[in-house]
Length: 261
Ligand SMILES: C[S@@+](CC[C@H](N)C(=O)[O-])C[C@H]1O[C@@H](n2cnc3c(N)ncnc32)[C@H](O)[C@@H]1O
Image (cartoon, rainbow, N blue to C red; front, side, top):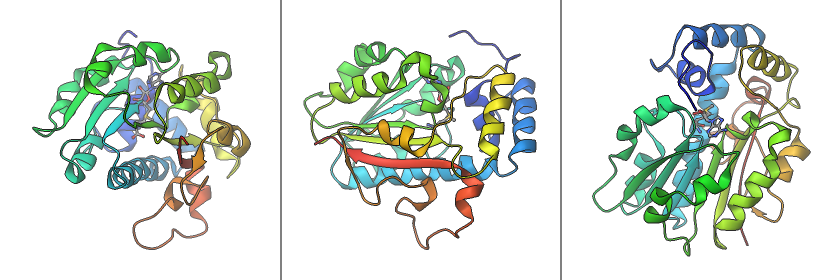
């Protein structure tokens, strides 16, 4: 994928909401338009990111030592490898993104622990074999051992014509039993605003396809839910108190973690 700062891009818009500085005028215009239709989108970004870190930490605590993070985003501290290598210094992480700007930051993602390893693959999730066959993945992972696959806030950028269910099934077929799928996804179920966000994204030149609860659940076909099952990012094993009832409408994402039996 080529670098086009004049067209808004999902990674850079998300970076803006998380308070980063790797974004351009077109990204900030799209971000502002999105905030007009969904004023709490920064809350969504934060809750999504926090879920990703909690779920990864949980899986490291369960003994998982290999993490495949697809749709990594521009580095935002703490990054996934920092969280899991704090628990397991020998944990190995392979990051994947198709945004060239993320690639320019790959070095920041590579400074893992002495015993652990991190690697980066520039690839498009719509071509899963380009990820699974990448030498930096096959040299970093032992594919006979379980892998935690994270697809966090990325599958809603894969529209139906690109076979999103086939993509996830292909990736989960390539990892052994005892592997996990960690996902979040934007949904129209929890309030009217997310459909408006989809419209703004498409008008700004970014792909977008939000999905219902049943459509989200379908990604986990054949997998076993980890408690609490299909929920929202902020309700998945929160640190401390449960979020207030109104929070789901402010976030409008689903989340879940499931194990390959
Ligand atoms: C909203 S960010 C999420 C970042 C991170 N997963 C998180 O939740 O904090 C979405 C990321 O997915 C990447 N992405 C979007 N479409 C992709 C595709 N087809 N293949 C690979 N990465 C993609 C974007 O470049 C961006 O970095």
